[in-house]
Image (cartoon, rainbow, N blue to C red; front, side, top):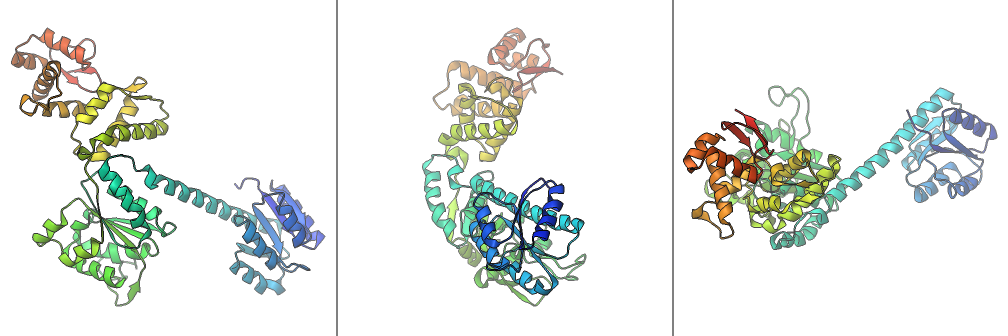
Length: 472
């Protein structure tokens, strides 16, 4: 149901104004009327109208001239022209100037309701779409890419210029480093930001489907092609196309992709008709394409066409100074998403985050912070809120042989205990025997580390991260 709105009716016939006012007021709307375009413009300086219903033929200033001024001064206001049969041509011309629709006199109340509801629904969709686009642009603003590492800053200085161009961009980096985030930021900070942003994950499709997904196909082009289908290049016309994991495209399709980049045209599968497109191409890969070329798995000429503006995202382990900033950023986001008010991360927990080698990069860090926010039982994230893999993983790597110079004797003792427990699946009796200490001593140590809840037998599995012991 349409919420009550502000509506202006403009007609030089008082009876028409009275009819519209009565009918629309019954629908709950606030209605004002005007007998001339001049008076309507005066009312518009006092009130912001959601919808204006205007007669086409009026003395002095016509409805068409009024429409031009409305679109100049109040572009968001929806205008519906009201006309008699003899001036339908004028109403159609008014729609070319920006009117949403026209209605014919005489009109019944139920017909008026349908026309008004359609116009107001259209206005709501336009405003919602504008708000959504604004939110998306804000989300992918370059300023929201978190970090102060020199490699990242150098990358960001290139992004603004790269985004404004139409050149093909090749983004490289390990999985989880944020390649898609950068690709979206490039699109939404480019002149194409109002056009479509289309994505295709090349690694997720069987070899036989990639060509159809890229270029589309005609009905009957192959088995199960029961109707014509547009490909991603057509969908992205006027915008940007992200080809994720470009290294997985098979050689036959690589040749066709090269042609599209060179000539900006292609044919659907099963068609001889060439289609022209205007697409900005952004490609990503976690592979070394130069090595793939040496292996004969990637075309060298395609590589040079893609590598116009290369951007490399460093792994998180090479920018560890950004971990505290990223962790706090994700903490704020997931606090809001989960209606939590966790104030921060303890020093011990942050030390664990800094020591970990992050094979999953930023995506892995984000997942851990989300988990911690959901499970945290105090106002700060502690090491007990981190998953067992995060607690055990970095400690398991710290042995005397790889001692990095910043571990105390107590920390080395903790490493030995946790590694041994991990080896024996949490069985304290066997771990204590190997360590040469009593089960009581081991239990006390686990209490000291905060890795065990109250109670528990000598044969239980410690679930590190929850602070609880689960009976085996």
